[in-house]
Image 1: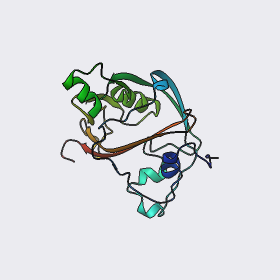
Image 2 (image 1 turned 60 degrees about the vertical axis):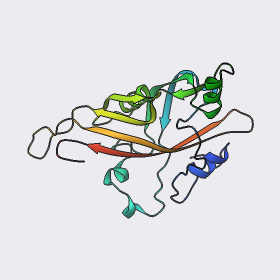
Image 3 (image 1 turned 135 degrees about the horizontal axis):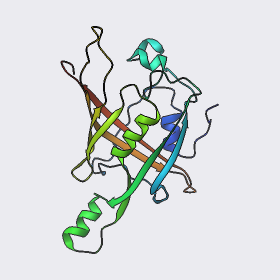
Length: 204
């Protein structure tokens, strides 16, 4: 059964929510990247299990049939299914107002932060979930614009006339983010809001 309590306020507000509420960016001057605690630095072997599915307004409001049959990760994923993959997190100089002041005024050494290797993690998760159209390549420049990713997918299924549909790509924009750490520092919760567009031959 899914947990009934959360170690962080953000986890409670997002994971245990029984209604749809878009994530809001409360601080307009906040960084455009989601920063993680130092203990996540390095490579992690991750195992996941789909515990349950909830439709706050009923299945009639689901944007895609595949979300009813499976999940956003795999249209064949059922409750109880597991997946395993690796995730990477690395250290970088944080794009924060305090660091900008430190660099511009020569006040010392800028502070580093831990971020997710979104390019590696996206491909790794796609393979771990055995997606029908896997992510094969990711364009992501965390220094120039960490909020935008371009996914290039592998071979797509055949069309009704048995002709290949051609390679598709996805444009992902991360538009809001929040994070929270438990009072004892042992639990971390991060949440992001994204907008995505799938582009293929003759379709958008």
